[in-house]
Length: 203
Image (cartoon, rainbow, N blue to C red; front, side, top):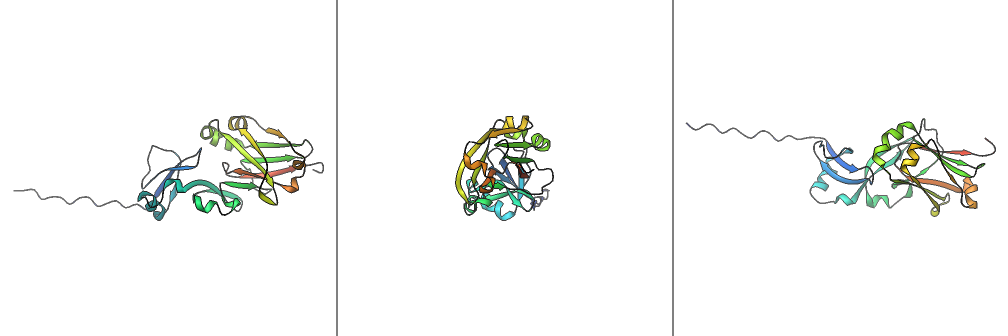
């Protein structure tokens, strides 16, 4: 007597989808409907985004990962590259402003008396980023406050120097840097929270 053929097990449907990315470049590496051990850094995405990527309707290169500012903190999101071109403040760069963030990961200090920029990274951020950055260069852009497309200078700091020292000081190189009211500072959002601190003869 032939054995009764058992029906196949039901297909497991999930409501969680994962986008894995390279934290050094913010490039998308893989999307899955289950957690995998091949990569360590990921965030959850919706089904529509997952479907567009796995079916080839959109390419991985169409997206980047970036921290986007929401009120007093930043959150990690998957962002279409096309959308990033619309506004400077919504791209992978963000202006670092004076704010009331408690225990920020990064403090950029404009020191008018000493005529230098000082960069402080919290111990929490150092522990989180020490392996991920691995000798990368961290860029800070000094731009005109009234025109974000006007670049005054680029400050390049070795990540190991920034993470190993209490403070990294960079002297001013131009007259306009003495006038913080005319300037803005921007960086690629590696840090989850950041603030600008102004030190002059009056404080």
